Image (cartoon, rainbow, N blue to C red):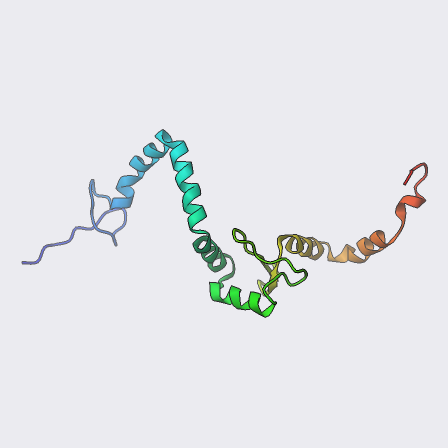
Length: 150
């Protein structure tokens, strides 16, 4: 005897649960009301889940942002000696290094610390003014200003 499987109207690929809905759609209002009644507990549970799943979160971010598998990230990091491409900063237990890439083409150039990633982004945005910035840093501009004590 074959039993006919009823499908949900909200998601035709999912089984019927109740009120013509799949289980996840049926449970949404209950979950929202539970969260509103237990906000502190919910936040604590989210913090604990995040702390226990950092690698899972990192892996998903790599895939979503760069189309990159975790082993590709690890291979690039090993090829760079296990640290930022520009300094000796290594990934911390709770924070990995940033994937440095060209924002126009998406080409990955390396793995760097957050400070160098921000610096590269600012330089890339102001590439036309880079020589002006270098000259400014190399000059003693404060000596040229009147009534300024150094």
